[in-house]
Length: 171
Image 1 (cartoon, helix red, strand yellow):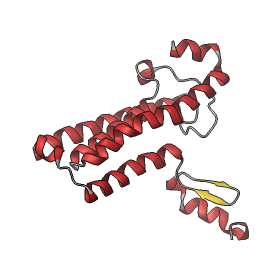
Image 2 (cartoon, rainbow, N blue to C red):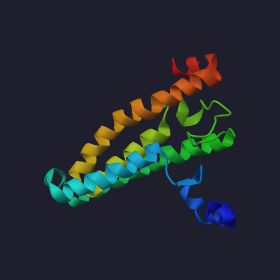
Image 3 (cartoon, helix red, strand yellow):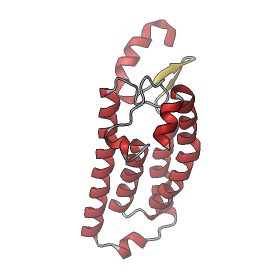
Image 4 (tube, helix red, strand yellow):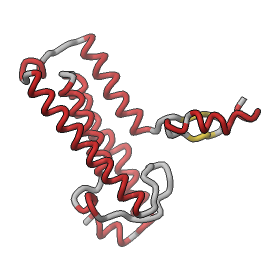
């Protein structure tokens, strides 16, 4: 049905979901986004099945709101500023698209992966805000999975693509 004239309308319909057609299969999200979604879904499911109530006992509702919102705002700030720098450099922020420029200014002077740090901060903030103990545990598990499963692969690609300038940047 993809080849019967529905391809363009489907692209317009699903444009908000970042997708691509790969051998007539619509891919809405990519690996790290699926992992972040899994953190939320699995964390909430485990909270429902095996409630621990640690965050509820350790932090008052007001504290959870302040800490959670603060972490979410910090995470959004990191991700949005990194995205803006990618756009200014006219390179792709999406890790599955080829890089055309090495971005080392702004937030990238202090963090090599501000978008992943931002997503992790958002997940931690959401966990605390919802008092979801298991989501917080899953967020902690998310960090090494992203590091070894996604970031290391990106670093190998960037080393090959940009060579010595990238090696100097990561040094």
